[in-house]
Image (cartoon, rainbow, N blue to C red; front, side, top):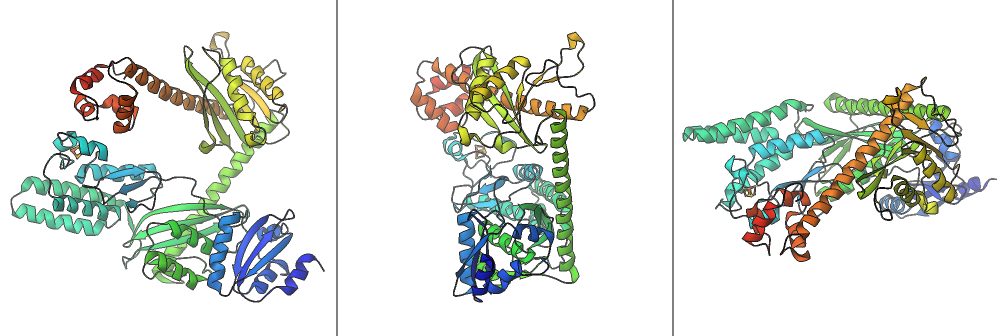
Length: 606
Ligand code: SF4
């Protein structure tokens, strides 16, 4: 009897948690069950596993361990803790890698304002979003900035103003920084903004209509006209939202689609009957059944969500639905229901979410397949032993040898992987020495042994044979020769009649011929251009910082303390540049005379 079969025969029929391990003893999956024996048997002793995916993954299980609990609820808590501890490869783990923008409003501040943030915290402030498309957050902010007279300035500027700024002049702010704005008047604007941001648009429109009628009755025509414009702007946003439910309730609707390599969950956000947005979540291969995937998603997503609706419609009811409802209820402070509707409006909504999940899965699978095809075609063209999936490209920048920098752009499966991009300030090279700069950054990138992993499949340097020889020499020095492919990409020399950029490989005198695969050359050029864009942006920033600091250095009376005070007050070099002498004067330690002197520093230097 195999080790697994023997363990299975002794497994308990009570509730608990099971940990699946691979042949190295690594935990690869954690699950919970009401009846451990039944659940485990379903993995190992089913004559026919439910699908190919599970069958393949089960083969990777070499051993398992169980932990008994007194109740199913305890098993649920323990399962969550163990998943957090081991991050098992085949569990559904919600990664919050991509930071979507949100809007933040801190009601504890005097005259609260809205700020755009990437990171949300449990700090007592209100957060709206996250907005999955940058266009959506910009449109929302545009309406808020134009029609809701909230202050637009940061707290430090708000405290130090001596007179209202342009926003007051053009009527987009009441000017609470300097004028006696009544708190209740401002609070009403805050409440309206909150209604708008929460998607309570119909309520808000009703309120504005009433205010407009009252203003017209009092013959306050200017006010009535402003309210009318505001109403039109808000109604326009409403036109873009679709009514999907006639009961005008708040609910989230989940759709699920999966294939052997990935699972997509689509979440529709329905507020007061309007579909106000949706978001897709991707998970890699998992051992979880559909109901378990939904359960894992609900626990992880709503634990951190700032808003939990009264109802969540799901395509598959998790085994522990009632326990989950209790948990959600604790987080929300009110009853939450998880439903799997079978007919009517709600079932249609559920089908719509499922349809969108399937579409997203198809789109992502196709794009992954085209990335794979690209990697294989490049492999063939460059005669590599492996498909060239991960490509790292370096470029340098300096202006007559000043502030030399370098940067690395990374593409994986045909798309930029921005989280892996790196910037380098050149440390050891003085003056303009492109070769030495390249050698320095390559050593910094690949010279840390195992810590340098993941390595690329292809390293690309911007430049011809000279740059390529440097890269090859550095890799040889680091003992990495042959660990990955290396190419140099050189611009075409039009004077010589060259028609396209050239790709050089070590040990080959002539560039690689891409005439049969022009799309591959275009792809490599795209990567080079991206590295160039990235390094130029970085270089500009570095130069800007230095020129301001050196310009400030030459002004009598501006020492390190004042430099620090200026930066602390304005928060960025860009804002110091844009500041008027009046604004500079508000900085502690900056006198009127000094502010005027600072204002005279030429713009390009300041
Ligand atoms: S008018 Fe005053 S409160 Fe309004 S944005 Fe300008 S500085 Fe801030």
